[in-house]
Image (cartoon, rainbow, N blue to C red; front, side, top):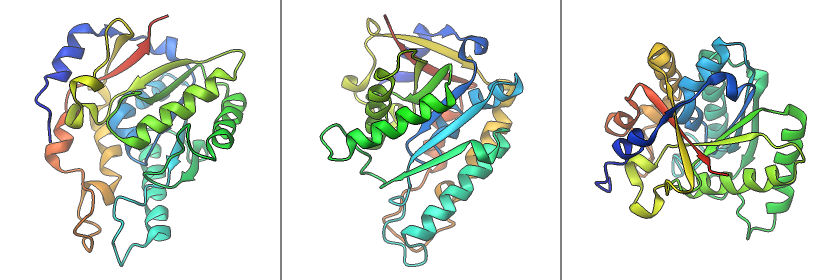
Length: 248
């Protein structure tokens, strides 16, 4: 249920134009297959247009979107969602080999109090050392989904282990629909950057649509299923993507 806060307008008023040349080669952290397209699909397309490399780490397996589907048990659903993710990335001109699937359990991505947090952080650290991105795009630290916050925790801990650290920008997914005042950024802590995506909106929308298991009734045998309805997707109709960067 929407909290009633005019969050988009509030952030738009604070936003400054972002330069893609300052982002450069980029690693996108997607807690679930579809977050990459929803939160920063337009920016990905623009980066690829300018010749920058983009890699995407999908943290969870996404299998809790339809937890009670007889026709799509966890392994089949994971395969579907990974296939959709690769299709979406190809629409955004990201090669399939640049997709990395960590396959943490959906809704159970490692938090600092989890026994496997350190080993998971080390996996992200190794990936950062291998790819050496100029910029990392990760969900907003207080985005109202457990896995999104956990993904930020993993990235924050992994980046802290680096001598040369990438720029970290935080993108927004569920703040619009589910966020409360406590989830909003304090403007004393964050800079708001804006990337205009009007020229690639159609491409970005095709990437979102590639996640058919999430945006359609492709899987219709689970009454508890999650579904990105047209009403939810209206939050992503503005021709811009916003990113938050911690003030130094």
